[in-house]
Amino acid sequence: MQLTPNSKFVSLWLYTIITMVVLMILIGGITRLTDSGLSMVEWRPIWGFLPPISDLEWERVFSLYINTPEYTLKNQGMNITEFKKIFFWEYFHRLWGRLIGIAFIIPLIIFYFFNKIPNSILLKLLVVLLLGSSQAIIGWWMVKSGLVDDPTVSQYRLAIHLSNALVILFLLLWTLLEFKNGNSKIKLDFSFLIFCFLFTTIVAGAFVAGMDAGLMYNEYPLMGYKLIPENYGEYGFLDPFENPASAQFHHRHIALLTTICILIYCYINFTQSSDMFVKKCSLLICAIVCSQFFLGIYTLLNMVPVYLGALHQSGAVLLFISLTIIMHRLNLIKTN
Image (cartoon, rainbow, N blue to C red; front, side):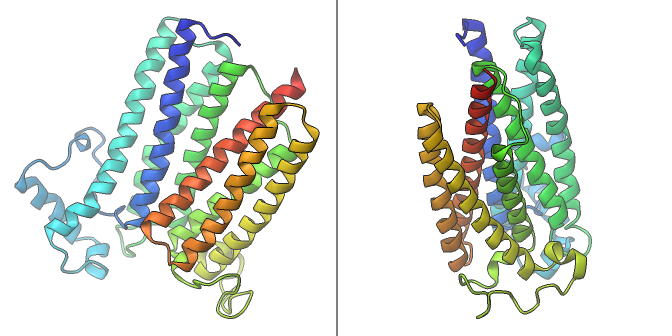
């Protein structure tokens, strides 16, 4: 597809939003890893755009934090200087979300007004707008779960928050690819199955993060000198979602299964496809998934330091993007 000067502006806009969403996911991961997510105890959609700019305002927000379970049970004695460090990441996370909203909505209105957005992608963009708007509400809903009794956000709400972010990223990337390369149908084939495996692996990681399950059983492949942790299954039907040991066990083995399946998938694509882009992309995905798997083990063995946790999440997002691109390409080839 030959892009016109006007369509190049739309393409650049979509590239920008995708980049911002990727950074948003990484910023959210760092916010979680630094235990900063509960530092802002009020949600001010408009006035929250500005950080505290006076000592009086800093004292006010700090006094609100002092009355939270996190301060009482985990950070008793924290001074305001230390508080500012954790406040930064949560504030930056929310600020970046607002900037994404502005960068998405204003150009969308302008492009629509001047009839620069094809009808084929308009509906997807409106769905992204709906999901993006709901993401802010989901985020606050998640934070509220850690402000009542237990100073930990609900792992369920964290998983929903991350899942929605991934769906937004997928729709944006798919829309960009359709805008540039043409329509590509999502089919219930091997590509889609592999994509679902990866999505499940990432969401399983959200449950690990939500329960700090990466801080236990810091060895591999055993868990406490056994393949299966001793307390596996203690919570019955909800055990995979509420037992930290089980959450880590499932994430480990779903990740292993996903890695093997992706390698098989890439081998099939490399040997059977005549498209050089597919061949190169398959090789790249092989390198990413192997690096991601071993990085996950190394992160676990080192008890999830912030820089390794953030790097591991970055690898997951990069793999997610790569699989989306190759799936679009393969289905585009099949439909042409």
